[in-house]
Length: 129
Image (tube, rainbow, N blue to C red; front, side, top):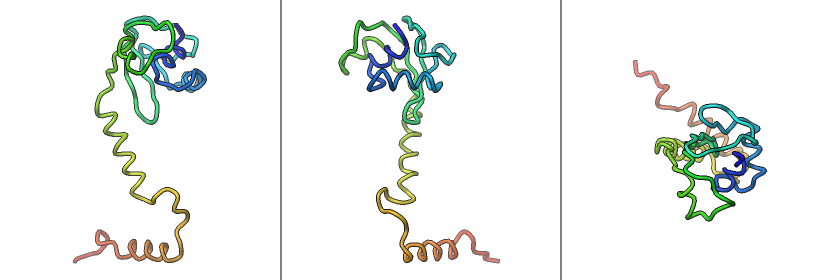
């Protein structure tokens, strides 16, 4: 089975077209080599893919006949992604929220003045000598 079809069948990508694009962009590796979407996948192959800033690692256990339900995906693959990858993604999400809430638009003049005052009066910059 083709790698793009396999990733679609085991529900890593919502459509085959998205899986194909990921392969073309070099986000998918099989046994340590970047692959084209037409690369054949066999049991015991090790796949690494980058999706949503997470590096997933999986081992092919079997080839499905067609797309399978979400509860049945574990029959066809073993996810060996380290937990640190998910923790890093969670930290990245919090880092983005730290700066400014989404949808609040540009800072007003008052916001800008408050930011400037905070930066000028930063306690880390004070010289206590």
